[in-house]
Length: 371
Ligand code: PMP
Image 1 (cartoon, rainbow, N blue to C red):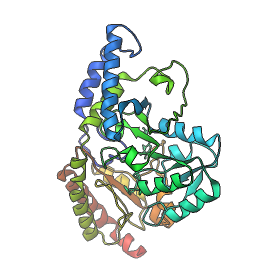
Image 2 (image 1 turned 90 degrees about the vertical axis):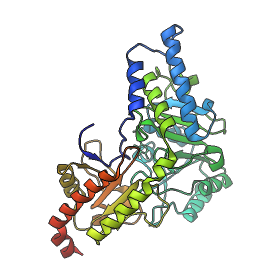
Image 3 (image 1 turned 180 degrees about the vertical axis):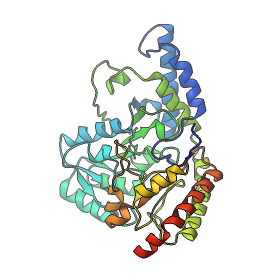
């Protein structure tokens, strides 16, 4: 890996060396998991082992896991399936792969702390009688955790099913689909130390299998396309290594970091601080300074963080999540996200804080003039 201090795990996590090793071995030979010969059967074994490993992450039997190309595909698959027959409610802070998956999705507002407004949800359920509600378990920008069991109970009261984008929850908080009342769950390998371009749609017990790609009958005809054997196996390894306990230990680092940031720069606003948040995500704003300015300065200092909503072009876009939380444009436009994961050390946080202190010293006249 480069010698940059990497604090952008919510964008993508470094690949676990154990996943890399197994993937390299599998990629060295041709494994089509549908072939009947020995190499094919070895590929099949690798896929089925990974299915067991990923199922544990979601608290379901392995038969409920459908591998695909990632959470964007899983989100599109579910939303499009339900949208063709009627209205679908989605929270206003969803990832674009939910928000843009179909036209005219009805947005559920969130409160200023980033938690879905349950009263508004109930009013929308009663008005629109949707077949599906989609709310992410954990927001990728703020780390705010949604009250999924309550959301599910409300959805069920009005006869709707619940889809959750579980990308930022996997390996960070426990997931038990049956207990939480989740009917469909989207997962992505690369947020937990697996490879990019692999993920899963996990089915609850509602008996419906939404499907987007048709063809060769793979994944029991739920998702056609030759399986990405090495990628799926890497996903399995990452799922097995994901330790919620280790992840939750990052809360100490995060809390200490936020306290030091406040000491250095009292003007910062920490978003979602009064809501339940996952341990390793912190999103803050320094009003008066643009995100780009800070991101570039920190990058030059060897620290990789983001503003939480990088476009595919690599440019910086104002966060729709912060806007939905009621943040003013200039607050949303000055946001930074620090996100940690399996290989984050106290030294990484020290490097970031050292860079931040230097940056703030340069900017403080501007910040104070603005305050
Ligand atoms: N949902 C969330 C919450 C995400 O953070 C991401 C990745 N940025 C996605 C969906 C898309 O996942 P993938 O890269 O696997 O398509």
